[in-house]
Length: 162
Ligand code: FES
Ligand code: FES
Image (cartoon, rainbow, N blue to C red; front, side, top):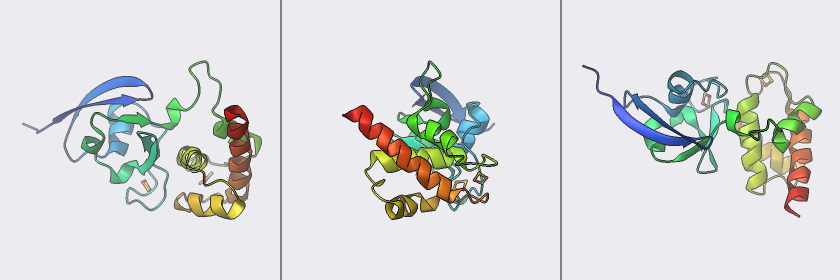
């Protein structure tokens, strides 16, 4: 009776197929259909950034993206950032090193935005980081620590690239 849409994506390097109501957001597809609850829902209206993931390497708000829009694309979520060996991504490690989270609810979105911030070359100064990261709200007030973490991770990424 229900009208479902078959979709297929590469998620964190693995091909996954689901059939969902066409109105399903990518956020709900990840959380409810793909058992990847690391991506969080803070508002469902594009205002908090807790749902930030990457599609084809670009950060997007998954609450404002229909799952259908990501069909055939490559998606990265917080669960896919660490190496398969368990080694943390430089941004994850830096968040730990700098206590850049408290409750942890905004953290997956913060980290995905931070990865994009560094990748897109917007981590050159505190102000630039603050501006780029301003779409990610943290009610625990971890902002100063988040900036420190992004700076450390940007340095670590630079070293790896040399
Ligand atoms: S849940 Fe997507 S921006 Fe808040
Ligand atoms: S760590 Fe709690 S909202 Fe950011």
